Amino acid sequence: MTGADAALSSRLGAALAQAVEACVTPGAVCQVTIAGETVTATAGDLASHDDAGAPIPLDQRTPVSSETVYDLASVSKVFTSIALLSLADEGIVDIDASVGEWLPSFRNGVRSDVTLAHLLSHTAGLPPVNPFTIQHAVQGFGTDDPRWVTPGRSALLDGILSLPLDRAPGTDKVYSCLGYITSMAAAEAATGASWSQIVRERVLAPLGLERTTLTPDAARTAPTEFQPELGRGMIRGVVHDETACALGGAAGNAGLFAPVADLTALGSALLAGLPDVLRPEFAALLWEDQLPRLIGPNAAAVEHNLGYGQSLGLRIGQRTWMSDAGTGARGHTGFVGTSLLVDREHDLVVALLTNRVHPNRSLADATDLRHAISTIAYGH
Figure 1 (cartoon, rainbow, N blue to C red):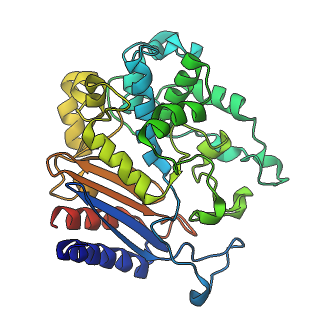
Figure 2: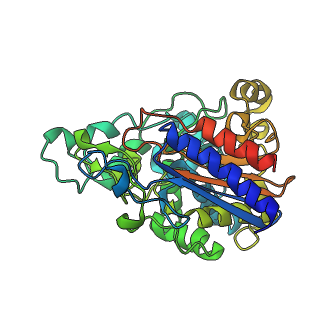
Figure 3: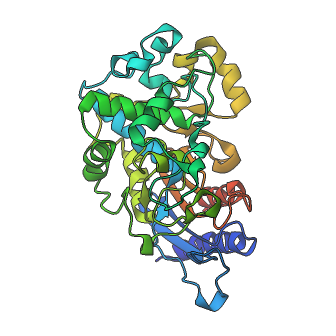
């Protein structure tokens, strides 16, 4: 490691340690790649509370390492976008065709105007989340409470696909996990394959992401939230997102787990244009702002209100966490405290993994930590 790399690692480590000290997260791992040179920093512990929700004494905690596996949460949406674009690249789906071509519940009225491009850019008009998920159990957690009886993946997915739109497609950009679940359902219908097979064969295998998985080893995975009220207990090795979990873990909005090196490798592949997965014209859709094309004259006002642009899968120049220098950055965040930033102009990848919802989601927000890490990376 060069002196410059050591200095960068020290600054990153100090930012992570400060966040741990402030109880933003029990632990964190970040990796910064600049012009092909990679620096890693870690701080804190795998968990602060045990499986019963009790505090773990400081001298009995397990430190995180660069090998620690984290729930990627909504950073999984980046993989979903790549998978759908791969299907489009092969002509199996058309991103600008009506989703009704594959999903019968989108064949009538204004719903027939919804396209895969709308779904992947959050402009389809769908609600943000499933309003009924919290009324169903997540299968496999052993609760006898009749309030938590799930209808199963098929019935739950049918319910999601039948939810009414909040607004006409192509009129606004409102973040929607349901849009990515719907795009997953379209991919399964178009291919006849399971979502786990689609992601594995079209994204993970071509990119060599051997440790990214939907089914992690719980012992190597940072736990997320303690949810005894849902019959889940301490969530470890199972996706945190309730809807994704109720769908069996394999969902378009969340569900993937990875160590930091795999997330960095994804970022590097994005910088390179995903040559092993997509032709340039399809890879460009992950990079170019799609809002002007999809919502027309209203796009400028929408982007002004949002403070960032949107490609088919990545946010563009969201300075609240990408830093003031990140006007040309692309990336995505995850609810549990994860994020991935890529910037071609600076030849930069910033991967951050935390479990800031452990043991409770209300304790902290990771935005300031993300901003601090991005600022350090740009100011190296």
